[in-house]
Length: 446
Image 1 (cartoon, rainbow, N blue to C red):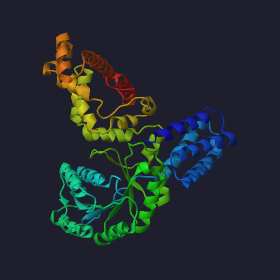
Image 2: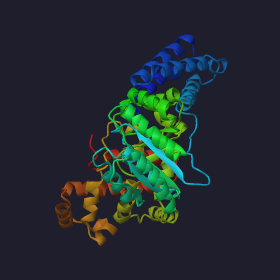
Image 3: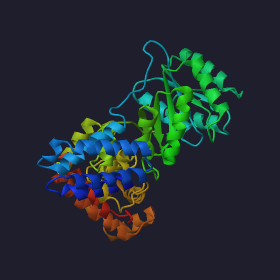
Image 4: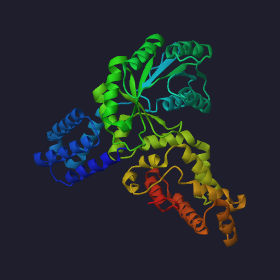
Protein backbone atom coordinates (compact mmCIF):
# COMPACT_ATOMS: atom_id res chain seq x y z
CA UNK A 1 0.00 0.00 0.00
CA UNK A 2 1.42 3.41 -1.08
CA UNK A 3 4.84 1.79 -1.58
CA UNK A 4 5.54 3.47 -4.91
CA UNK A 5 4.33 6.85 -3.65
CA UNK A 6 6.41 6.53 -0.48
CA UNK A 7 9.55 5.76 -2.49
CA UNK A 8 9.04 8.72 -4.81
CA UNK A 9 8.32 11.12 -1.95
CA UNK A 10 11.45 9.89 -0.15
CA UNK A 11 13.48 10.52 -3.30
CA UNK A 12 12.08 14.04 -3.51
CA UNK A 13 12.95 14.71 0.15
CA UNK A 14 16.51 13.47 -0.25
CA UNK A 15 17.20 16.20 -2.74
CA UNK A 16 16.28 18.93 -0.28
CA UNK A 17 17.08 17.42 3.11
CA UNK A 18 20.80 17.87 2.54
CA UNK A 19 20.48 21.54 1.70
CA UNK A 20 21.79 24.01 4.23
CA UNK A 21 19.24 26.53 3.06
CA UNK A 22 15.94 26.45 1.22
CA UNK A 23 15.65 28.65 -1.85
CA UNK A 24 12.96 29.39 -4.41
CA UNK A 25 14.74 27.10 -6.84
CA UNK A 26 15.18 23.97 -4.72
CA UNK A 27 11.67 24.35 -3.25
CA UNK A 28 10.18 24.58 -6.75
CA UNK A 29 12.15 21.52 -7.88
CA UNK A 30 11.05 19.45 -4.89
CA UNK A 31 7.42 20.51 -5.20
CA UNK A 32 7.49 19.55 -8.86
CA UNK A 33 8.77 16.06 -7.96
CA UNK A 34 6.06 15.72 -5.30
CA UNK A 35 3.34 16.66 -7.77
CA UNK A 36 4.68 14.12 -10.26
CA UNK A 37 4.69 11.45 -7.52
CA UNK A 38 1.07 12.22 -6.64
CA UNK A 39 -0.09 12.08 -10.24
CA UNK A 40 1.76 8.79 -10.77
CA UNK A 41 -0.16 7.47 -7.74
CA UNK A 42 -3.40 8.29 -9.61
CA UNK A 43 -4.29 11.19 -7.34
CA UNK A 44 -6.92 13.53 -8.76
CA UNK A 45 -5.18 16.29 -10.76
CA UNK A 46 -6.90 19.17 -8.93
CA UNK A 47 -6.14 17.57 -5.56
CA UNK A 48 -2.48 17.15 -6.50
CA UNK A 49 -2.28 20.72 -7.76
CA UNK A 50 -3.88 22.24 -4.66
CA UNK A 51 -1.76 20.04 -2.40
CA UNK A 52 1.54 21.10 -3.92
CA UNK A 53 0.50 24.75 -4.10
CA UNK A 54 -0.19 24.73 -0.36
CA UNK A 55 3.12 22.99 0.31
CA UNK A 56 4.97 25.57 -1.76
CA UNK A 57 3.26 28.48 -0.02
CA UNK A 58 4.07 27.05 3.42
CA UNK A 59 7.67 26.28 2.46
CA UNK A 60 8.19 29.83 1.24
CA UNK A 61 7.25 31.19 4.67
CA UNK A 62 9.94 32.95 6.65
CA UNK A 63 9.75 30.40 9.47
CA UNK A 64 10.89 27.65 7.12
CA UNK A 65 13.42 29.60 5.07
CA UNK A 66 15.26 30.70 8.21
CA UNK A 67 14.95 27.36 10.02
CA UNK A 68 18.06 25.65 11.34
CA UNK A 69 16.81 22.36 9.84
CA UNK A 70 14.89 23.34 6.70
CA UNK A 71 14.69 19.74 5.43
CA UNK A 72 12.85 18.58 8.55
CA UNK A 73 10.55 21.59 8.42
CA UNK A 74 9.71 20.75 4.82
CA UNK A 75 8.88 17.15 5.78
CA UNK A 76 6.57 18.42 8.51
CA UNK A 77 4.76 20.61 5.98
CA UNK A 78 4.19 17.59 3.74
CA UNK A 79 2.96 15.56 6.71
CA UNK A 80 0.51 18.27 7.81
CA UNK A 81 -0.87 18.63 4.29
CA UNK A 82 -1.23 14.83 3.90
CA UNK A 83 -3.19 14.65 7.14
CA UNK A 84 -5.43 17.44 5.92
CA UNK A 85 -6.09 15.93 2.48
CA UNK A 86 -6.82 12.54 4.09
CA UNK A 87 -9.50 14.07 6.29
CA UNK A 88 -7.80 15.72 9.24
CA UNK A 89 -9.08 13.48 12.02
CA UNK A 90 -10.76 10.12 12.61
CA UNK A 91 -14.54 10.18 12.16
CA UNK A 92 -16.64 7.57 13.94
CA UNK A 93 -19.86 5.84 12.87
CA UNK A 94 -23.08 7.66 13.65
CA UNK A 95 -25.20 5.62 16.08
CA UNK A 96 -28.76 6.35 17.15
CA UNK A 97 -28.83 7.22 20.84
CA UNK A 98 -32.23 5.88 21.84
CA UNK A 99 -33.20 3.37 19.14
CA UNK A 100 -31.91 0.78 16.70
CA UNK A 101 -28.96 2.06 14.65
CA UNK A 102 -29.31 1.16 10.97
CA UNK A 103 -26.17 1.14 8.82
CA UNK A 104 -26.82 1.05 5.08
CA UNK A 105 -24.04 -0.31 2.86
CA UNK A 106 -23.82 0.65 -0.82
CA UNK A 107 -21.28 0.18 -3.61
CA UNK A 108 -20.55 -1.40 -6.96
CA UNK A 109 -20.40 -5.15 -7.47
CA UNK A 110 -16.91 -6.51 -6.86
CA UNK A 111 -15.92 -3.78 -4.40
CA UNK A 112 -15.88 -6.18 -1.45
CA UNK A 113 -19.17 -4.89 -0.09
CA UNK A 114 -20.62 -8.12 1.32
CA UNK A 115 -17.29 -9.12 2.86
CA UNK A 116 -17.13 -5.70 4.48
CA UNK A 117 -20.58 -6.26 6.01
CA UNK A 118 -19.21 -9.38 7.71
CA UNK A 119 -16.10 -7.53 8.87
CA UNK A 120 -18.14 -4.63 10.21
CA UNK A 121 -20.44 -7.01 12.10
CA UNK A 122 -17.39 -8.58 13.77
CA UNK A 123 -15.87 -5.18 14.50
CA UNK A 124 -19.08 -3.97 16.15
CA UNK A 125 -19.53 -7.20 18.09
CA UNK A 126 -15.96 -6.94 19.37
CA UNK A 127 -16.82 -3.41 20.51
CA UNK A 128 -19.78 -4.47 22.65
CA UNK A 129 -22.53 -4.01 20.07
CA UNK A 130 -25.23 -6.57 19.19
CA UNK A 131 -25.49 -6.47 15.39
CA UNK A 132 -27.77 -8.18 12.89
CA UNK A 133 -27.11 -8.24 9.14
CA UNK A 134 -29.75 -8.07 6.40
CA UNK A 135 -29.31 -9.71 2.98
CA UNK A 136 -30.81 -7.08 0.66
CA UNK A 137 -28.48 -7.99 -2.21
CA UNK A 138 -31.09 -10.26 -3.81
CA UNK A 139 -29.74 -10.24 -7.37
CA UNK A 140 -26.14 -11.43 -7.32
CA UNK A 141 -25.95 -15.23 -7.38
CA UNK A 142 -24.94 -16.65 -3.97
CA UNK A 143 -24.81 -13.19 -2.34
CA UNK A 144 -27.32 -14.22 0.32
CA UNK A 145 -25.48 -17.47 1.01
CA UNK A 146 -22.18 -15.62 1.22
CA UNK A 147 -23.61 -13.26 3.83
CA UNK A 148 -25.09 -16.17 5.79
CA UNK A 149 -21.69 -17.87 5.83
CA UNK A 150 -19.97 -14.71 7.04
CA UNK A 151 -22.65 -14.12 9.68
CA UNK A 152 -22.22 -17.67 10.96
CA UNK A 153 -18.46 -17.16 11.28
CA UNK A 154 -18.98 -13.96 13.23
CA UNK A 155 -21.84 -15.37 15.28
CA UNK A 156 -24.49 -12.79 14.41
CA UNK A 157 -28.06 -13.28 13.12
CA UNK A 158 -28.90 -12.65 9.47
CA UNK A 159 -32.28 -11.67 8.03
CA UNK A 160 -33.22 -12.83 4.53
CA UNK A 161 -36.29 -13.87 2.52
CA UNK A 162 -36.83 -15.99 -0.57
CA UNK A 163 -38.45 -13.22 -2.60
CA UNK A 164 -36.22 -10.93 -4.67
CA UNK A 165 -37.50 -7.77 -3.03
CA UNK A 166 -34.66 -5.74 -1.52
CA UNK A 167 -36.91 -2.99 -0.15
CA UNK A 168 -39.06 -5.55 1.66
CA UNK A 169 -35.96 -7.26 3.11
CA UNK A 170 -34.69 -3.97 4.50
CA UNK A 171 -38.07 -2.96 5.94
CA UNK A 172 -38.74 -6.32 7.60
CA UNK A 173 -35.17 -6.56 8.88
CA UNK A 174 -35.67 -3.44 10.99
CA UNK A 175 -38.59 -5.09 12.82
CA UNK A 176 -36.65 -8.36 13.14
CA UNK A 177 -33.65 -6.60 14.65
CA UNK A 178 -35.82 -4.84 17.21
CA UNK A 179 -37.54 -8.09 18.19
CA UNK A 180 -34.16 -9.80 18.56
CA UNK A 181 -32.99 -6.97 20.86
CA UNK A 182 -30.16 -6.05 18.49
CA UNK A 183 -28.85 -2.49 18.70
CA UNK A 184 -27.34 -2.33 15.18
CA UNK A 185 -28.70 -3.50 11.82
CA UNK A 186 -26.29 -3.63 8.86
CA UNK A 187 -28.04 -3.78 5.48
CA UNK A 188 -26.11 -5.19 2.52
CA UNK A 189 -27.56 -3.78 -0.71
CA UNK A 190 -27.10 -4.91 -4.31
CA UNK A 191 -24.22 -3.73 -6.45
CA UNK A 192 -23.94 -3.45 -10.20
CA UNK A 193 -21.02 -3.59 -12.58
CA UNK A 194 -21.60 0.09 -13.27
CA UNK A 195 -23.71 2.95 -11.96
CA UNK A 196 -27.26 2.71 -13.31
CA UNK A 197 -30.64 4.29 -12.63
CA UNK A 198 -32.28 1.12 -11.34
CA UNK A 199 -29.57 0.60 -8.77
CA UNK A 200 -29.68 4.20 -7.57
CA UNK A 201 -33.47 4.18 -7.25
CA UNK A 202 -33.46 1.00 -5.18
CA UNK A 203 -30.77 2.19 -2.74
CA UNK A 204 -32.50 5.58 -2.45
CA UNK A 205 -35.83 3.85 -1.74
CA UNK A 206 -34.31 1.67 0.97
CA UNK A 207 -32.68 4.68 2.58
CA UNK A 208 -35.97 6.57 2.56
CA UNK A 209 -37.81 3.71 4.28
CA UNK A 210 -35.26 2.61 6.92
CA UNK A 211 -33.84 6.09 7.63
CA UNK A 212 -30.34 4.86 8.52
CA UNK A 213 -28.20 6.62 11.08
CA UNK A 214 -25.20 5.85 8.87
CA UNK A 215 -24.79 5.23 5.14
CA UNK A 216 -21.42 3.91 4.03
CA UNK A 217 -20.15 3.71 0.46
CA UNK A 218 -17.69 0.88 -0.22
CA UNK A 219 -15.08 1.41 -2.94
CA UNK A 220 -12.33 -0.79 -4.32
CA UNK A 221 -9.17 1.27 -3.79
CA UNK A 222 -7.46 -0.55 -6.67
CA UNK A 223 -9.73 1.22 -9.17
CA UNK A 224 -8.04 4.56 -8.45
CA UNK A 225 -9.81 7.59 -9.90
CA UNK A 226 -12.71 5.42 -11.10
CA UNK A 227 -13.45 4.82 -7.41
CA UNK A 228 -13.53 8.57 -6.79
CA UNK A 229 -15.80 9.25 -9.76
CA UNK A 230 -18.20 6.48 -8.73
CA UNK A 231 -18.29 7.77 -5.17
CA UNK A 232 -19.17 11.22 -6.47
CA UNK A 233 -22.12 9.86 -8.49
CA UNK A 234 -23.40 7.85 -5.53
CA UNK A 235 -23.08 10.79 -3.19
CA UNK A 236 -25.10 13.01 -5.51
CA UNK A 237 -27.97 10.52 -5.25
CA UNK A 238 -27.91 9.10 -1.73
CA UNK A 239 -25.75 11.56 0.23
CA UNK A 240 -23.74 8.94 2.14
CA UNK A 241 -21.99 9.68 5.43
CA UNK A 242 -18.64 8.03 4.90
CA UNK A 243 -16.39 5.94 2.66
CA UNK A 244 -14.86 2.49 3.12
CA UNK A 245 -11.71 1.69 1.15
CA UNK A 246 -11.25 -2.03 0.48
CA UNK A 247 -8.37 -4.09 -0.96
CA UNK A 248 -5.67 -1.77 0.35
CA UNK A 249 -3.37 -4.79 0.44
CA UNK A 250 -3.57 -5.09 -3.34
CA UNK A 251 -1.43 -3.43 -5.98
CA UNK A 252 -2.87 -0.02 -5.26
CA UNK A 253 -1.13 3.31 -5.76
CA UNK A 254 -3.21 5.17 -3.18
CA UNK A 255 -4.85 7.72 -5.47
CA UNK A 256 -8.37 6.97 -4.22
CA UNK A 257 -7.44 7.45 -0.55
CA UNK A 258 -5.68 10.74 -1.27
CA UNK A 259 -8.43 12.12 -3.50
CA UNK A 260 -11.80 10.97 -2.23
CA UNK A 261 -12.13 13.20 0.86
CA UNK A 262 -11.41 16.37 -1.11
CA UNK A 263 -13.60 15.46 -4.09
CA UNK A 264 -16.62 14.01 -2.26
CA UNK A 265 -16.31 16.04 0.96
CA UNK A 266 -17.00 12.93 3.03
CA UNK A 267 -14.60 11.20 5.43
CA UNK A 268 -12.97 7.81 5.00
CA UNK A 269 -14.21 5.82 8.01
CA UNK A 270 -12.73 2.35 7.48
CA UNK A 271 -9.99 0.65 5.51
CA UNK A 272 -10.06 -3.04 4.71
CA UNK A 273 -7.32 -5.46 3.69
CA UNK A 274 -7.58 -9.11 2.71
CA UNK A 275 -10.45 -11.54 3.18
CA UNK A 276 -10.05 -12.30 6.88
CA UNK A 277 -12.91 -10.99 8.99
CA UNK A 278 -10.58 -9.20 11.41
CA UNK A 279 -8.82 -7.33 8.59
CA UNK A 280 -10.73 -4.08 9.15
CA UNK A 281 -9.48 -0.90 10.78
CA UNK A 282 -10.90 2.55 11.52
CA UNK A 283 -9.23 5.17 9.35
CA UNK A 284 -6.82 7.57 11.05
CA UNK A 285 -5.56 10.29 8.66
CA UNK A 286 -2.51 11.07 10.79
CA UNK A 287 -1.43 7.43 11.02
CA UNK A 288 -1.88 6.94 7.30
CA UNK A 289 0.19 10.05 6.59
CA UNK A 290 2.96 8.67 8.81
CA UNK A 291 2.99 5.40 6.89
CA UNK A 292 3.07 7.17 3.53
CA UNK A 293 6.12 9.12 4.68
CA UNK A 294 7.84 5.97 5.96
CA UNK A 295 7.42 6.90 9.63
CA UNK A 296 5.59 3.70 10.47
CA UNK A 297 2.48 3.45 12.63
CA UNK A 298 3.51 2.36 16.10
CA UNK A 299 0.18 3.33 17.69
CA UNK A 300 -1.82 0.99 15.45
CA UNK A 301 0.74 -1.77 15.98
CA UNK A 302 0.44 -1.46 19.76
CA UNK A 303 -3.36 -1.46 19.53
CA UNK A 304 -3.32 -4.65 17.45
CA UNK A 305 -0.97 -6.27 19.94
CA UNK A 306 -3.16 -5.26 22.88
CA UNK A 307 -6.16 -6.88 21.23
CA UNK A 308 -4.41 -10.27 21.07
CA UNK A 309 -2.00 -10.37 24.00
CA UNK A 310 -3.12 -10.75 27.59
CA UNK A 311 -1.23 -8.51 30.03
CA UNK A 312 -0.63 -11.31 32.55
CA UNK A 313 0.62 -13.64 29.83
CA UNK A 314 2.89 -10.89 28.53
CA UNK A 315 4.49 -10.52 31.97
CA UNK A 316 5.01 -14.28 32.18
CA UNK A 317 6.59 -14.25 28.76
CA UNK A 318 8.89 -11.39 29.73
CA UNK A 319 10.08 -13.33 32.77
CA UNK A 320 10.79 -16.37 30.60
CA UNK A 321 12.80 -14.26 28.18
CA UNK A 322 14.79 -12.64 30.98
CA UNK A 323 15.50 -16.02 32.64
CA UNK A 324 16.44 -17.60 29.30
CA UNK A 325 13.67 -20.20 29.66
CA UNK A 326 11.79 -19.21 26.50
CA UNK A 327 11.04 -22.45 24.62
CA UNK A 328 9.91 -23.54 21.17
CA UNK A 329 6.50 -24.15 22.75
CA UNK A 330 6.35 -20.47 23.75
CA UNK A 331 7.61 -19.47 20.32
CA UNK A 332 4.83 -21.49 18.65
CA UNK A 333 2.17 -19.83 20.83
CA UNK A 334 3.51 -16.39 19.95
CA UNK A 335 3.33 -17.24 16.23
CA UNK A 336 -0.36 -18.03 16.65
CA UNK A 337 -0.97 -14.69 18.35
CA UNK A 338 0.93 -12.80 15.66
CA UNK A 339 -1.08 -14.51 12.90
CA UNK A 340 -4.29 -13.29 14.54
CA UNK A 341 -3.04 -9.71 14.30
CA UNK A 342 -3.25 -9.76 10.49
CA UNK A 343 -0.88 -9.72 7.54
CA UNK A 344 2.75 -10.03 8.61
CA UNK A 345 3.93 -7.63 5.93
CA UNK A 346 1.31 -5.08 7.02
CA UNK A 347 2.34 -5.41 10.66
CA UNK A 348 6.03 -4.94 9.93
CA UNK A 349 5.28 -1.93 7.72
CA UNK A 350 3.97 -0.23 10.88
CA UNK A 351 7.44 -0.35 12.42
CA UNK A 352 9.30 2.90 11.66
CA UNK A 353 11.94 2.38 8.99
CA UNK A 354 10.91 -1.19 8.19
CA UNK A 355 9.21 -0.38 4.89
CA UNK A 356 12.48 -0.05 2.99
CA UNK A 357 14.18 -2.84 4.94
CA UNK A 358 11.53 -5.35 3.88
CA UNK A 359 11.14 -4.06 0.34
CA UNK A 360 13.01 -6.98 -1.26
CA UNK A 361 11.64 -9.62 1.12
CA UNK A 362 8.55 -11.59 0.15
CA UNK A 363 6.71 -12.43 3.38
CA UNK A 364 3.35 -14.02 2.74
CA UNK A 365 0.79 -15.18 5.26
CA UNK A 366 1.96 -18.78 4.81
CA UNK A 367 5.58 -17.98 5.62
CA UNK A 368 5.38 -19.60 9.06
CA UNK A 369 3.71 -22.83 7.93
CA UNK A 370 6.96 -24.83 7.54
CA UNK A 371 8.14 -23.59 10.95
CA UNK A 372 4.81 -24.61 12.50
CA UNK A 373 5.03 -28.01 10.81
CA UNK A 374 8.52 -28.59 12.25
CA UNK A 375 7.48 -27.66 15.78
CA UNK A 376 4.30 -29.75 15.51
CA UNK A 377 6.44 -32.76 14.55
CA UNK A 378 8.44 -32.47 17.77
CA UNK A 379 7.61 -34.16 21.04
CA UNK A 380 6.66 -32.06 24.05
CA UNK A 381 10.08 -32.74 25.56
CA UNK A 382 11.84 -31.62 22.37
CA UNK A 383 9.89 -28.36 22.30
CA UNK A 384 10.79 -27.66 25.93
CA UNK A 385 14.43 -28.71 25.54
CA UNK A 386 15.54 -28.30 21.89
CA UNK A 387 19.15 -28.98 22.87
CA UNK A 388 18.31 -32.72 23.05
CA UNK A 389 17.44 -32.83 19.33
CA UNK A 390 20.19 -35.00 17.85
CA UNK A 391 20.68 -36.34 14.33
CA UNK A 392 18.13 -39.16 14.52
CA UNK A 393 15.52 -36.88 16.06
CA UNK A 394 16.10 -34.31 13.32
CA UNK A 395 15.55 -36.95 10.63
CA UNK A 396 12.31 -38.02 12.30
CA UNK A 397 11.10 -34.42 12.60
CA UNK A 398 12.04 -33.68 8.99
CA UNK A 399 10.07 -36.70 7.76
CA UNK A 400 7.07 -35.72 9.85
CA UNK A 401 7.06 -32.10 8.75
CA UNK A 402 7.89 -32.55 5.07
CA UNK A 403 11.07 -30.48 5.44
CA UNK A 404 14.79 -31.28 5.52
CA UNK A 405 17.36 -31.72 8.27
CA UNK A 406 18.98 -28.55 6.99
CA UNK A 407 15.72 -26.67 7.63
CA UNK A 408 15.62 -28.04 11.17
CA UNK A 409 19.20 -26.95 11.80
CA UNK A 410 18.47 -23.49 10.44
CA UNK A 411 15.36 -23.08 12.60
CA UNK A 412 17.16 -24.18 15.77
CA UNK A 413 20.06 -21.85 15.01
CA UNK A 414 17.76 -18.91 14.39
CA UNK A 415 15.74 -19.73 17.49
CA UNK A 416 18.84 -19.55 19.70
CA UNK A 417 19.86 -16.26 18.09
CA UNK A 418 16.36 -14.89 18.59
CA UNK A 419 16.39 -15.87 22.28
CA UNK A 420 19.59 -13.90 22.80
CA UNK A 421 18.25 -10.93 20.87
CA UNK A 422 14.93 -10.93 22.75
CA UNK A 423 16.75 -10.92 26.07
CA UNK A 424 18.54 -7.71 25.13
CA UNK A 425 15.38 -5.98 23.93
CA UNK A 426 14.27 -3.79 26.80
CA UNK A 427 12.56 -1.06 24.82
CA UNK A 428 9.89 -1.17 22.13
CA UNK A 429 11.99 1.15 19.97
CA UNK A 430 14.35 -1.76 19.28
CA UNK A 431 11.54 -3.69 17.60
CA UNK A 432 12.87 -2.78 14.18
CA UNK A 433 15.99 -4.92 14.75
CA UNK A 434 13.85 -7.92 15.59
CA UNK A 435 11.77 -7.49 12.47
CA UNK A 436 14.90 -7.07 10.38
CA UNK A 437 16.07 -10.43 11.71
CA UNK A 438 13.14 -12.03 9.88
CA UNK A 439 15.12 -11.60 6.67
CA UNK A 440 17.38 -14.45 7.78
CA UNK A 441 14.62 -16.74 9.02
CA UNK A 442 14.14 -19.93 6.97
CA UNK A 443 11.51 -19.93 4.23
CA UNK A 444 11.63 -16.11 3.81
CA UNK A 445 12.13 -15.79 0.07
CA UNK A 446 14.00 -13.03 -1.69
